Length: 146
Length: 210
Image 1 (cartoon, chains in turn purple, green):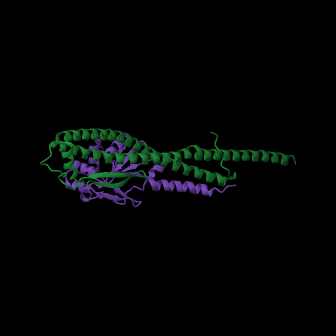
Image 2 (cartoon, chains in turn cyan, purple; image 1 turned 60 degrees about the horizontal axis):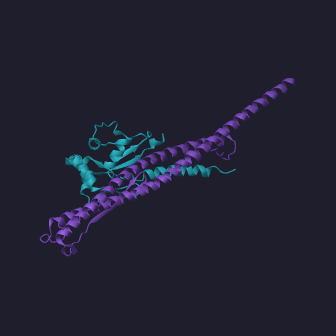
Image 3 (cartoon, helix red, strand yellow; image 1 turned 90 degrees about the vertical axis):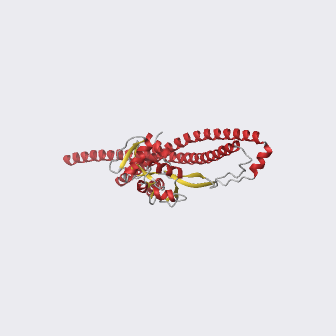
């Protein structure tokens, strides 16, 4: 009779590996837009030690959306897009009102955050990712496994 | 396709283990499927952008060649070559990477060389040459953009292929195999229960007779 433990171990490894791989791009800490604009090579360090570069054009585009310096200081980048248990929608994590303002302007529609999250649907997500490629990042939440 | 039974001892402990394994496999499948859907979305988006960028590149090169021919016609080939031989451009391409659902893809950005002048003599040249130079700069931008997009497309495609293999293995081999084995074990236990009941009835009859 074959021993079942290697099989189970393989599945466990696969699950652990997948979770590690999908969330490898998460930043160790987010940076403020105002700080990034002053850096020569704007970037953040990811959880796996790699660097995530921001395109200056995108940063300048964001800065043009929120003109006051105070607001620039409040916007933390990259903005996190959480993928939960529902495959059809995603949630943008909002720490301040600035994120809401930026996303609303990018998608050209009014949005209301609920419990610190803005829920958007797949077509809107595609549009958002098209416009803000480097300033947004996916987070695979543990809720995905529920 | 008939599913293969996993060779296990028909015991309750094995059944519990199999159920646990099935739950785990379903969790892995969920996360892999979500990742696949995001990667596919990004791949399609990149493909659309690549088509657009290719069109832009062809247009930019065509316009630049036209402008260069005009400038050559105006100045003459030898005079233009004499002017352009002294020019030097030092464009800076910033290369970095970004991560999309676990795939590291390159990110290129063209930065200006910091020189306000293009290097050729403005007195001896005309606006035709300025126009040609301006269009050539646009060509460079378009080339860098397409380089980033094409590499992203390749990497995303490879990752989609790999993830699809995992999803298919889970969906068509591992999970059905586990389900079939659990069903088989359940049936085996039910049969044992029925046999046990029959045996007990027979013993009861024998005891009653005796």
